[in-house]
Figure 1 (tube, helix red, strand yellow):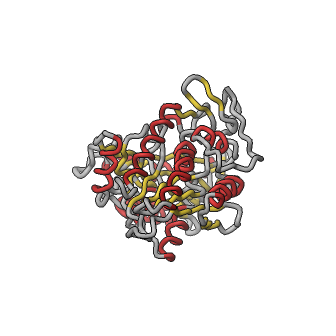
Figure 2 (cartoon, rainbow, N blue to C red):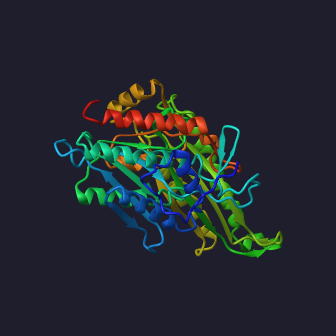
Figure 3 (cartoon, rainbow, N blue to C red):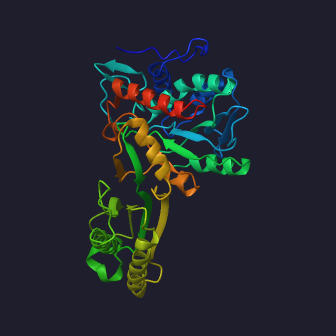
Length: 408
């Protein structure tokens, strides 16, 4: 069954939309990270304003992307006016280029118990459930029954380095808003993820000196020196996998280093003067980038010295491209206990992938990850979320809202 996005129709808040309705609309916006997300943001902004809420936007430098932050205030007699609970989600999705989809990725399609579409699980499903909850939260607020604020934070460019969330957090700090907790709705099959690794991406450029391949002594082979550095990165990866302070609760219990791309050379009979490769580092929360950068920089210096002894203009550059902090579980015990009660599941998970959760914990906001769908479906052709998962998320958020009411 193909669902109608109805993108051009104004939402009528007198007839509340279901989470499936909202997810259908959200999938209809092509918010691949290379494009603007403003059409989606403006849709949500209009909806929130119809509910009587004030919306705050923060923009990227080009003004073609925006974050949205909106607060359902606590009742007039409630404490913690500037505190509350954040429901957080990113609006951008990964590309569909080169993927073999069975249906239009930007048209929600239901087959059996699954709703297909780009972003259905990563992570517009959670956003849809959160938007569906807003009218009830507003009703409770207006009745003076909401004892702590409920915030919704929607970000841009999570998929390309978590670029939007820091702007939201800086804005909250400037406005004196210090949320008690945050729930990031990345797909976890509605289980509780309490910590995740950080990620840093590096590009290495090895500048050699060209020569005819019959005169190798006159050149400096960039590919050969790049291979030596790659070999060292692999050795370091093996070393850190056997540290005594690894964490068995993670699905991959150690920090990892992985070379991802490489390119260099122009012809077999030319000593190459340039080779570039990239690698990523996914660190356990207690490890830092410096744990691997220090030895890699030392190796870069050693190899560069060898190269420059043959040709002074040669050498190696190491450039950082992305950096997303790990999310720790150091300060979120109280939130974990609350989620355990609401879900009836006290199992804690730690994962290798990164989210905006680390940025929230770095800002002093205890955070957990919990949302509908499976991370195994994310970024793939025929991405889907089970309808039963959306139903579970609706039930979870309802219980969460109940816990924030005066009568709870």
